[in-house]
View 1 (cartoon, rainbow, N blue to C red):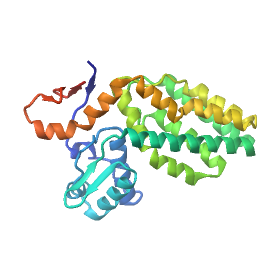
View 2 (cartoon, rainbow, N blue to C red):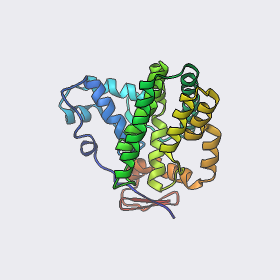
View 3 (cartoon, rainbow, N blue to C red):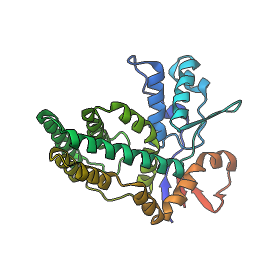
View 4 (cartoon, helix red, strand yellow):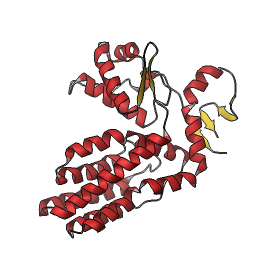
Length: 279
């Protein structure tokens, strides 16, 4: 049996910090909730009550409502009329759709860059990001920490976003960033149960940059596809790891089961032990 160590916390303990005086309230609430949904602190079926969230941050309900609408557009929140707003279940279909969008946008981005070429200063900047990423990984004392929002995650994001900036298609990056939320949520679930691809991110980033500098569009796209994997690769990976499907089903049921079972110990053959979910 596999185990997920997971503790359900009240929402005030999850989002108690994060609002500052900088930026719009809607943006800040959106990012606080989005980050905590993606890192799984706010699990599927968790109710997001406008009044409660507004009270935590001592603000009106209006910016909270607008942030929830944005999250619904990202597929991370479901708004049910006369019922409320809830974190959506992790969806395999939505995940594979996001993988499809990512492969096409990122593959097209590096192909475009290799076609048009990049300046010397852009070459230096990309290589500097790769070097910084290597330094971060070498100094990481907790490789099993939550993937999302870790220093390694942030520098990886910077690398990919910079490619889109240099290609002159920042709007495509924003589209990708929105659709990719489900990819990051799935990646964190994989990390929870200890399954994921073994990848050499640093060397793969270097291969992508080398192909771009060499003005080889075909090799650049191939290097990116090897780096992120295409939909067929991901479907094969999931098929070879059935424990991931079981974990997704169990994790999607955690909140509803906790609220329904009270003192019961089993749900459809899945065992809940304290803060652990065994599947």
